[in-house]
Length: 326
Ligand SMILES: Nc1ncnc2c1ncn2[C@@H]1O[C@H](COP(=O)(O)OP(=O)(O)OP(=O)(O)O)[C@@H](O)[C@H]1O
Image 1 (tube, protein in one colour):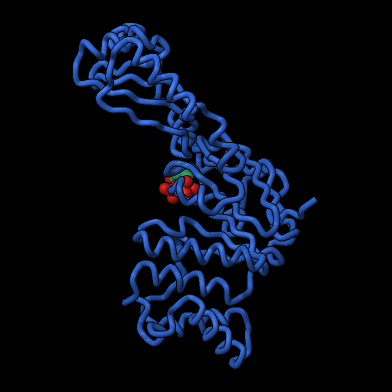
Image 2 (spheres, protein in one colour):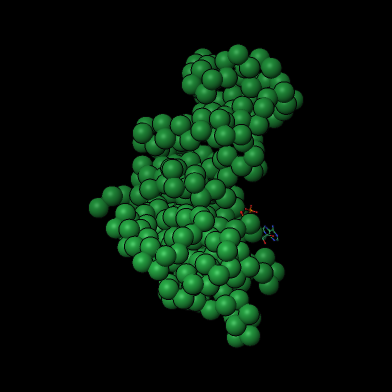
């Protein structure tokens, strides 16, 4: 069995009468990337803060082991093997990137020579050599984020927590950050990240947990999560209301959008399914003005699991009828 870098059971945290985490289990195998997804305020940062020993869980939580150390009795030992970067950035804007790195080396009690060597190595690795002598306040968002991670790596952590590592970055900087994260994992580091971007979880994570209302509502690989919901469909749009009505009669399994004159037909999007659909339309002499194939992605999973206000589409009911049913 693979060793677990993080094994947390029954995580609980409330602020006053607001329950933020209501018994969350999180297990992360060593050397893997785990993504915690959830809408704003779901409790992702709170989970990161607990796992990285910045705050304590409530009494009644189960055991939490990080890097093999029980947080209740050996928090100091756990702290020695982890690094945290995120919304609470450690970068000091008033001093240079290099000075920030050397400060970190001091905090980790590295000798002067070792501190300089480590700082130089990491500045090089994160493409910050040119900027190293400039105040960090002059850095772009992407550079600051890279410096933040470089600082975290000074202590050689085996497990790193990245709280929304790419929020606010432009696409190029985001891809650079993804590359950095992949390299960290190749080097054996375990990465626990929180993200608002489903695409990011899909790209990077071996396993993903979706947090909602203080609970994990789904967990698995991106593929497993996508399989949880059907979601796949073909959408046919018409400009002629008569053609739309005929098509709705011919395709009784379709969901109707009377306003947009569009029909949504559940489908796995395969060539065979599409051919059969088109054959049915052909045989009735109906032509759609637009056809789009939608295969489920993480967005569908995320919204299906976290949006409690959505009423699933009822097959083939006109919008007014649906209204009347409410
Ligand atoms: N120190 C605190 N005191 C009171 N409430 C808090 C505190 N910290 C967090 N909360 C509340 O707990 C909830 C979860 O916050 P948390 O920061 O963990 O969410 P999040 O999922 O990281 O959200 P975001 O994506 O917006 O950062 C929020 O409603 C927040 O207001």
